[in-house]
Image (cartoon, rainbow, N blue to C red; front, side, top):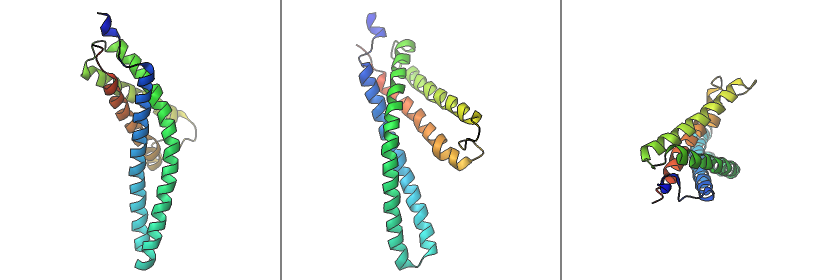
Length: 169
């Protein structure tokens, strides 16, 4: 029965998997943000300028926005890699401790619990911070900088839990 509490996934591999998922989801979010920003700015430019000038302005704005978002995404991907790696190590420990038989449903709930738990703790910290703009008093800021990335973190926790929940035999 010693195989029940063992895992074929090493701690290092768990961290790499978590970091990889974090990086991929960061770039996916960046693509969505870029599309939203480019479409929104293009619509505003088109209504404000004549058709000949609008096309050049829309192209220049799209390139500028895409470049800025890409640079920011690279920085955030590094942060996401660290958070993803640490979270995967925690998930690996939780899976070994609370899911020794590698049940898929239980693994998904462990990942979901970790994701929601971390999101909830960070949310409480933000709510008690004086002067924080990451609260429901500023819904656009809260959604963009915290709610959607928090949801992505929950999804990443579930995906990572699923990839780490493998049988040792």
